Length: 164
Picture (cartoon, one colour):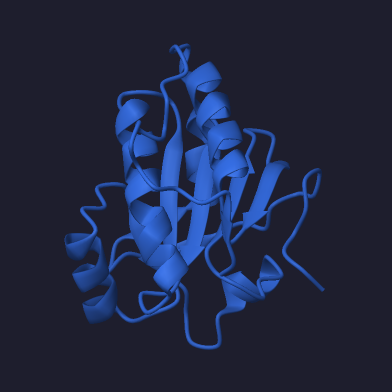
Protein backbone atom coordinates (compact mmCIF):
# COMPACT_ATOMS: atom_id res chain seq x y z
CA UNK A 1 0.00 0.00 0.00
CA UNK A 2 1.33 3.43 -0.91
CA UNK A 3 0.48 6.88 0.38
CA UNK A 4 -3.15 7.93 0.18
CA UNK A 5 -4.04 9.27 -3.25
CA UNK A 6 -6.05 12.17 -4.61
CA UNK A 7 -9.77 11.84 -3.98
CA UNK A 8 -9.30 9.95 -0.71
CA UNK A 9 -10.66 11.40 2.51
CA UNK A 10 -7.76 12.43 4.73
CA UNK A 11 -7.69 10.81 8.17
CA UNK A 12 -7.91 13.34 10.97
CA UNK A 13 -4.73 14.38 12.70
CA UNK A 14 -4.60 15.27 16.39
CA UNK A 15 -0.99 15.54 17.54
CA UNK A 16 1.12 17.65 19.89
CA UNK A 17 3.83 20.11 18.95
CA UNK A 18 7.23 20.03 20.72
CA UNK A 19 5.83 22.29 23.45
CA UNK A 20 2.83 20.01 24.11
CA UNK A 21 0.12 22.04 22.33
CA UNK A 22 -2.33 19.96 20.27
CA UNK A 23 -3.11 20.74 16.64
CA UNK A 24 -5.83 19.02 14.62
CA UNK A 25 -6.52 18.74 10.92
CA UNK A 26 -10.26 19.17 11.56
CA UNK A 27 -9.69 22.61 13.11
CA UNK A 28 -7.38 23.59 10.26
CA UNK A 29 -9.91 22.62 7.60
CA UNK A 30 -12.54 24.83 9.22
CA UNK A 31 -10.41 27.80 8.02
CA UNK A 32 -9.65 26.47 4.53
CA UNK A 33 -7.33 24.02 2.78
CA UNK A 34 -4.30 22.47 4.46
CA UNK A 35 -0.88 21.28 3.39
CA UNK A 36 0.31 18.39 5.55
CA UNK A 37 3.99 17.50 5.20
CA UNK A 38 5.30 14.33 6.85
CA UNK A 39 9.06 14.21 7.45
CA UNK A 40 11.93 12.66 9.35
CA UNK A 41 14.74 14.94 10.57
CA UNK A 42 17.51 12.63 9.26
CA UNK A 43 16.00 12.43 5.75
CA UNK A 44 18.16 14.33 3.20
CA UNK A 45 15.21 14.77 0.83
CA UNK A 46 13.13 16.23 3.68
CA UNK A 47 15.97 18.62 4.48
CA UNK A 48 16.05 19.66 0.81
CA UNK A 49 12.25 20.09 0.62
CA UNK A 50 11.50 22.04 3.78
CA UNK A 51 13.06 25.38 2.74
CA UNK A 52 10.77 25.36 -0.32
CA UNK A 53 7.76 24.59 1.89
CA UNK A 54 8.75 27.51 4.12
CA UNK A 55 9.02 29.74 1.05
CA UNK A 56 5.53 28.65 -0.03
CA UNK A 57 4.23 29.31 3.50
CA UNK A 58 5.70 32.82 3.45
CA UNK A 59 4.16 33.45 0.00
CA UNK A 60 0.74 32.58 1.49
CA UNK A 61 1.14 34.46 4.78
CA UNK A 62 -2.07 35.83 6.16
CA UNK A 63 -4.24 33.51 4.08
CA UNK A 64 -6.76 30.90 5.10
CA UNK A 65 -4.36 27.99 4.50
CA UNK A 66 -2.86 25.85 7.23
CA UNK A 67 0.59 24.35 6.78
CA UNK A 68 1.29 21.49 9.17
CA UNK A 69 4.53 19.55 9.40
CA UNK A 70 4.31 16.07 10.94
CA UNK A 71 7.62 14.90 12.35
CA UNK A 72 8.42 11.25 12.84
CA UNK A 73 10.94 12.20 15.54
CA UNK A 74 10.91 13.32 19.16
CA UNK A 75 10.53 16.83 20.53
CA UNK A 76 14.24 17.72 20.86
CA UNK A 77 15.17 16.56 17.35
CA UNK A 78 12.06 18.20 15.88
CA UNK A 79 12.85 21.54 17.57
CA UNK A 80 16.42 21.35 16.24
CA UNK A 81 15.18 20.62 12.68
CA UNK A 82 12.68 23.50 12.80
CA UNK A 83 15.40 25.89 13.97
CA UNK A 84 17.98 24.68 11.44
CA UNK A 85 15.65 24.95 8.45
CA UNK A 86 13.86 28.13 9.56
CA UNK A 87 10.44 26.51 9.62
CA UNK A 88 7.83 28.96 10.87
CA UNK A 89 4.70 26.95 10.18
CA UNK A 90 3.36 24.63 12.90
CA UNK A 91 5.03 21.25 13.34
CA UNK A 92 3.62 18.37 15.38
CA UNK A 93 5.05 14.95 16.18
CA UNK A 94 3.62 11.57 15.27
CA UNK A 95 3.41 9.21 18.24
CA UNK A 96 5.34 6.03 18.96
CA UNK A 97 4.65 3.47 16.23
CA UNK A 98 3.70 6.28 13.80
CA UNK A 99 -0.10 5.78 13.93
CA UNK A 100 -0.89 8.87 11.82
CA UNK A 101 1.83 8.14 9.27
CA UNK A 102 0.43 4.62 8.97
CA UNK A 103 -3.13 5.92 8.47
CA UNK A 104 -1.80 7.98 5.56
CA UNK A 105 -0.12 4.88 4.10
CA UNK A 106 3.39 6.31 4.23
CA UNK A 107 6.31 4.28 2.96
CA UNK A 108 8.64 7.25 2.30
CA UNK A 109 9.16 10.80 3.48
CA UNK A 110 8.72 13.52 2.67
CA UNK A 111 5.09 12.87 1.85
CA UNK A 112 2.90 15.90 1.15
CA UNK A 113 -0.88 16.13 1.05
CA UNK A 114 -2.87 19.14 -0.17
CA UNK A 115 -6.23 18.69 1.53
CA UNK A 116 -9.34 20.60 0.50
CA UNK A 117 -11.67 22.03 3.18
CA UNK A 118 -14.07 19.12 2.56
CA UNK A 119 -11.35 16.77 3.86
CA UNK A 120 -10.50 15.20 0.51
CA UNK A 121 -6.90 14.93 -0.64
CA UNK A 122 -6.46 16.94 -3.85
CA UNK A 123 -2.70 16.39 -4.31
CA UNK A 124 -0.59 13.56 -2.90
CA UNK A 125 3.17 13.74 -3.39
CA UNK A 126 5.96 11.43 -2.19
CA UNK A 127 9.60 12.49 -2.25
CA UNK A 128 10.62 15.84 -3.74
CA UNK A 129 8.68 16.60 -6.90
CA UNK A 130 9.25 20.02 -8.42
CA UNK A 131 6.06 19.73 -10.49
CA UNK A 132 3.96 18.73 -7.47
CA UNK A 133 5.33 21.59 -5.39
CA UNK A 134 4.48 24.01 -8.20
CA UNK A 135 0.94 22.58 -8.34
CA UNK A 136 0.53 22.93 -4.58
CA UNK A 137 1.91 26.48 -4.72
CA UNK A 138 -0.61 27.37 -7.44
CA UNK A 139 -3.46 25.86 -5.38
CA UNK A 140 -2.30 27.83 -2.34
CA UNK A 141 -2.26 31.07 -4.32
CA UNK A 142 -5.74 30.38 -5.67
CA UNK A 143 -7.05 29.62 -2.18
CA UNK A 144 -5.72 32.93 -0.85
CA UNK A 145 -6.75 34.95 -3.90
CA UNK A 146 -3.15 35.85 -4.60
CA UNK A 147 -1.16 35.83 -7.78
CA UNK A 148 0.96 32.70 -8.22
CA UNK A 149 4.54 33.55 -7.26
CA UNK A 150 7.44 31.50 -8.58
CA UNK A 151 8.49 28.96 -5.96
CA UNK A 152 11.90 28.37 -7.49
CA UNK A 153 14.31 31.21 -8.14
CA UNK A 154 16.50 31.72 -11.20
CA UNK A 155 19.90 30.15 -10.68
CA UNK A 156 18.72 27.64 -8.07
CA UNK A 157 19.73 24.09 -8.87
CA UNK A 158 16.47 22.22 -8.39
CA UNK A 159 16.05 18.70 -9.74
CA UNK A 160 12.70 17.59 -11.12
CA UNK A 161 12.54 14.74 -8.61
CA UNK A 162 14.39 13.36 -5.60
CA UNK A 163 13.15 10.11 -4.05
CA UNK A 164 12.43 10.10 -0.34
